[in-house]
Image (cartoon, rainbow, N blue to C red; front, side, top):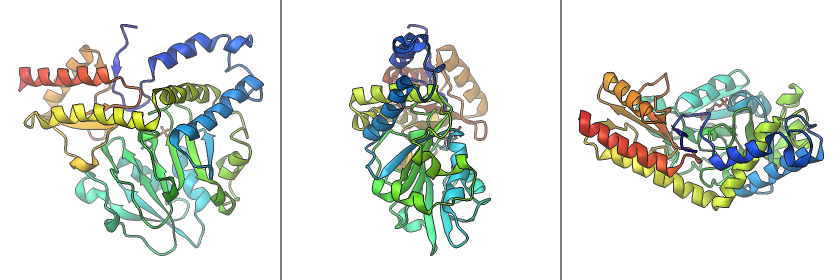
Length: 361
Ligand SMILES: *Cc1c(COP(=O)(O)O)cnc(C)c1O
């Protein structure tokens, strides 16, 4: 397919071409069932095999230990901002949050509606250009969990080393979901919207430690309780069938490539290409992020002045390099290089950036 653009959008994101093609081929008549997957019962044997393989393969590829349950929930990562505190917080405990940027702030403001929440580290003081060191986290007694955002999609920062805070962690991993191994023993819960690295939109995947489920609050609506979904294997109500099916195809593709170690290396290679262009541009392109904390998924950079940025974005678009505009709240440029973005697209962008500097520098 020769007219496929390079999609650097922050989400929804590019998906592997072979996955799209397989889905297209299987779409109208799913495996000879005489109907499509999205028309049939979510209790059918055809769908059941998709659902259970998606669960087991996601855990397999992500290296999830057996003492975690995987849940498929609607409402995206945004619903998890509320669901986490609704389930975990009680009158006699508190929750710590790292304020690392736009997404963390949203998690904090929702959590405050449901319990006692405090900010253990405030990144606004360094303009959100890095993540905290463990020694900077100010944790209080009775802290039930520390909530982190593993990768800030808008600010372009990530944890290079995972915090070791001495309390169980909960992480929003939406924008670097399944792009690198994680230290599961430090987490009680991990969640992410799937539309950045794994699938089309419509779902969050939640991994929750099995032995915490019993302690969670019961006095909330059924859909909002992790325990209900765990018990019914995410079939309490009608699940987002098409999203789960697409995620299965993507995860099979990831496994076929060699799993997380290969995915992580690919991400490093892609990000390195772009940071190198930025760092070697003598300030023509500028990335304000502390080198150690630079995101491998969302590479943010600025040019000298908004007019030049507009020209850059418009010429990039004309060269079929799309989605490079920074988030509307911060401006600038952002190249999102999720798992399925081909390395060739990154190389094309690097070449385009160098040429743009040669002409405009
Ligand atoms: C995109 C994103 C979200 C929001 O995800 P939705 O699934 O759209 O609710 C939350 N957190 C992070 C880090 C994100 O990148």
